[in-house]
Image (cartoon, rainbow, N blue to C red; front, side, top):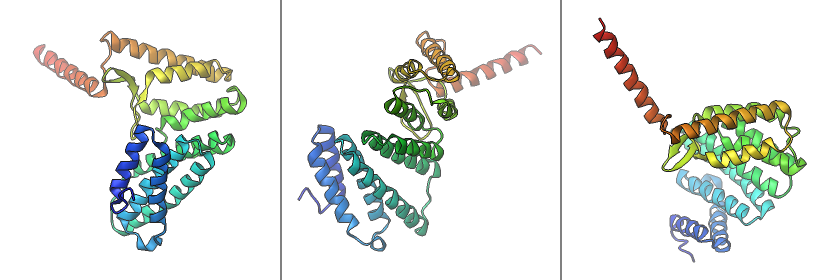
Length: 266
């Protein structure tokens, strides 16, 4: 059924179903493949089987979240955490090189996903703990520092207790670098994470400014929002490079030009 003889085909099929909005069938297929692989004893799974299991359980957690099956999504994410540890052990035993930055970014994303599901279940305190752990795992993750502000609004209706989250927010936004363009879209580009829309960022920050944060937080948010809008407008006017590569090329050209001017003046 569903091409179960080839697990990779099953993954392709249920992911296509997610894109098509056929979530119930996607869940059935992902759960079936997950259960079948989990039925194997851990010491019987090679690296490939364990890697597939992690991939499928991660997908299942997300599908359950989309379907608003909050408790099941949280439980699935706990299984994922356990199986990721087993995968890491299997990779080490096999002598495989692990990209630590990418691994920590993925760990952060998994914790964020669990935190979102916990928020859906109205377990906001546990969600905040997940986001805190996610930031520790990958300090450049923007979602790890944005979600706590969103959670505080869900929990309390305001940001009166957001001061302790400000240092993490500052760090992540600093690591994300300047405003850039991808195609026709203004974005921030945090390392090891997906691009983040500047327009959505501004919508979120404007909401936070109006959500009664402490004056210290409010003042910093206003200053940052003004700077982001200034950068966006400067790119639109052609006064700021659209991306980091272009900026580096301009800087290199300027250094070369300055050198030739210095040589010519001697």
